[in-house]
Length: 300
Length: 338
Image 1: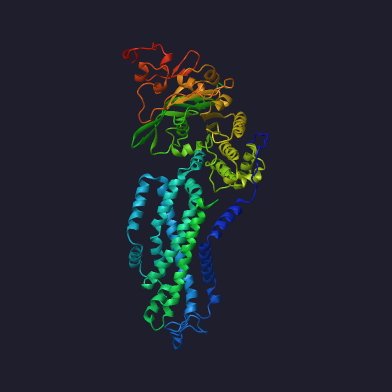
Image 2: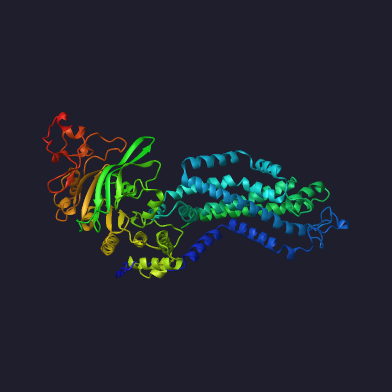
């Protein structure tokens, strides 16, 4: 606009001009800090991520090297967590296994979230028959127990870690879709959506630029909690022999091997089991903490 | 104002109905008005009389379902907005007809810096690069009187006060120099001091851009200050349509009289303000006669059985009341009215 206008100074300017992103993050972190359990969860997750990233540097042995002369050794100075039935170092295998478990977990949740978010946004935004069709499909998926659905998918696709990822991701889709749809319904009624529409924005812009960023918090919370379930399900499927195949150091697979020596060498199953439990616990309490931190009622 | 100009916006017999389980609610039931370039038209009425639905109908922003434009036309420079394809309609929204909403606290996306939101409004209609749009958005913030606009542009809505957010909304609405601005209660949520600043600003920008303004409000003070013409709405109808001077000097419709009567007078000391007895009829169950009849002090038999038309009087005032028709005798028989 080319018009010149005198700028009248509004009367009150009391707010400080600071970097908004920074202060929001600070608020968020301070709420998270108050929740001790969430902190512990966060530390556990960071610890596992660290392990997964630096496994080759941390592992004392190769996870694949077979030393039959050392098989089923109890924990010792040489092998902190003992060795398995083929003499492989359990600690090294667990360290490497963190990459597989976390990888499958994250990939499955991303897969589920991606489709779930799109379905949820479309269903919530357009409503009417689009909503009915999508959400009935999701209801059908939800009607199957998750693990059964995963078994069916793997039965169709064949056992492999990638198929486990797809299967576990697939049964996360309806959960994300539901949450996203609910939040979309809530946000699309807000005045700023009318306002941006009154400025001539199209549906795609409204959905992805204006609705999506405003429903991120429930998605993140759900994603964190789903990670726990996804890791557990993936390990479970591998335990059943449907996912990672030996000699892969996947925790579920290791657990399955350890099953044969539960009484003679319990550490073979114990430590992979612990690794799974602690990580899942970490994601669960961190997810709960996030939910509290995102809850507006928790803010002063 | 430029009365000789061709009108830029003509609303003819506009009807917006909502179909719900309780029945059909006729929120806007056949209203007509015209807006000329540079003119300000006030639409006044109490909550639920259809003011906001009228403005949303013009831009075709009625939530649908359950809402639907059931009839009439909205001619913008001769083109009917009611039947226009959605794609063309988007070109008009924000570009040629803009809207300011009532609630500045919730009318901005809470997670996007305000400057970016204005830039987006600009880029929706103008082929500008990101940087150019940003610069123009800062320019717009300066235009609407926000101090240190470069810094403010980077802030998110929660860091601005209500008055500033409303200025941001105005900046967004005016970014593409629209020809018509619909201001839906732009000052209702603001402090009195900020109210007058915002009205001043709208007026100021109106003279500069030469746009027509539709001022939707329930505040007769705002009308007196800003409007050239006034349409008084009651229960989905316009009951009186006249110039602002005529409305204030010589209100004709009993409802308009009641509205003006309910204002506190500066030279009278009263404990209790006057009210209009009764309440607005349910939109699901409109009376067949005059919709104001149940609250009208002049009510006669014919008022409850027959609906009056909006008829132009000798002085140019249009009013929807039997009192100003030849049929009005006080006790007229039904046959004579039909």
